[in-house]
Amino acid sequence: MRKWYIVAGIAAVVGALLGGIALFGGSASPRGYVARSFSRSTADDLDSAQAYRSTKAPSAVAAMIRGKWKPAEEFADASGYYLRYSDDVVAVFPNGTGSLIRVEDSDRAYRRYHSHVGGYWGFTTGQGEAGRGGGPGSGK
Image 1 (cartoon, rainbow, N blue to C red):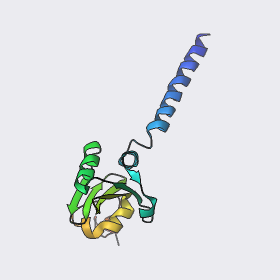
Image 2 (cartoon, rainbow, N blue to C red; image 1 turned 90 degrees about the vertical axis):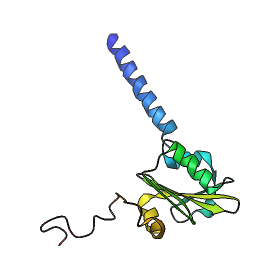
Image 3 (cartoon, rainbow, N blue to C red; image 1 turned 180 degrees about the vertical axis):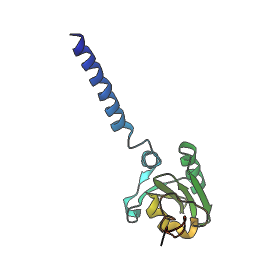
């Protein structure tokens, strides 16, 4: 009889963990936060970049996102705010009196925004691994 209580207890813990992952999995990231906090704008999607809109200024939107999810790196210029996370980049652009927000995989985003962030971001996702160097016989 005691064995069944242990099995039931383990099943309850596993079920709670899986339920928590399902419930919070999509929002436990910068991508999820943006999706929850701003209005989706599929008309502004660009390839794989998902677009959102806000009535707030780009600086305020970037501050909101930064306040909830600290980026690994960030860059701002006249074109917008670029927040790099381990897997995603959140780019916030002026759009009339509000903002256009795009969320994209970091590799694709780097290729798209390299003219803005290329000299400032030290991406760790493999962009520099294709070059030569690293010791005798490597990269040749």
